[in-house]
Image 1 (cartoon, rainbow, N blue to C red):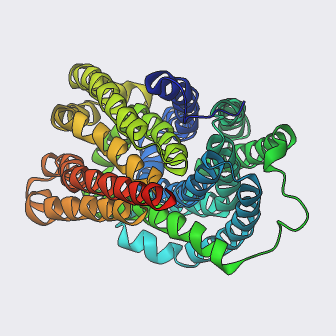
Image 2 (cartoon, rainbow, N blue to C red):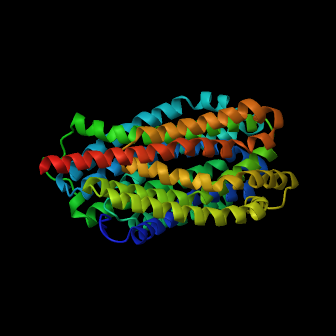
Image 3 (cartoon, rainbow, N blue to C red):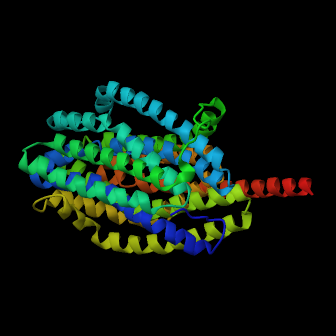
Length: 452
């Protein structure tokens, strides 16, 4: 159901929008978690390390698809908020062209540079073969990831966060079934986990697209709106590329940390992989709040409702502090036991590393949550460049850790990589958000005065 977020209680609107997004994101993360659980329990620590050693790579690749299509979604939501339905449909058509070209180009690049990427990641020789196989299959499925996120962005732009959820639930259940059948019953290895992920995402994307355009007539592109216009493509890419690069740059910093980590052996790699899988789940409330806020701010920007933008951001900050405060306490005391989810029997070294990671990282959960608030608020305002620079700041934070304590203190030093990245990324986002909001207010005030 489409939802106009330019009217009504901001808290109620954000919560109603974010809950389906949160549930959907949790199910989306089941792809990686179930892969790791099934692989670890049925194939052992080395197989879990093989999948985990490129976990940040698969995150980065998914981020390219999510970031690009989310950028498109900001343009869609601004058109919808400004009641420009013909312009909305035209941008959807051009975005579809761009998405196909982007998928083909990136798939070729990823597959072509896979050997070099694995070499730079310092993949241990004993798990290299499995790692290469898993990653290659995952890269072939890049287009499926783009398709699902494109259709989800179109639905969310008009205020519908439930439709993407329904198809993610379907996809996640299918992924679980295929994981178990392919690995346990058909005797496949890590390739079975990769095939299950790609197949599930592809089917989810196709069905989501059919449903979205069947349900919302306002999104069905009409004759005369299919024309490819360079200016429209430029507007979409102006938002999409920075958001895609934001994910990629964040992942690049993680790859540098992972490259250092991969020298510490299978137990350290497996523990960090488990921590990152759990960490991705922990981040989902922030992602959901940010996704809701981006649509909310985007629609209200299109409608020129500055005060509503302020109200929405304040409510999002309050929710974030409360939620991540609770997660901080829970993970500080229970984080070390998460390794039991991924292995058939306890491993003392893995549990020790997990305990070390969560005792350090949890202390910085609130700054992590606030990144999503300010980053997505800026994107909703139409600023795609500075949020991308936030990814650069995260990269610098991780480089700082690797260059100072990461190589000297081993796993203990690596544990400070994420906290350093979160803190350094957050600091500049806050003043830039207020600057952009003030600038927009002056612009709208000037337009109103001129019309008078």
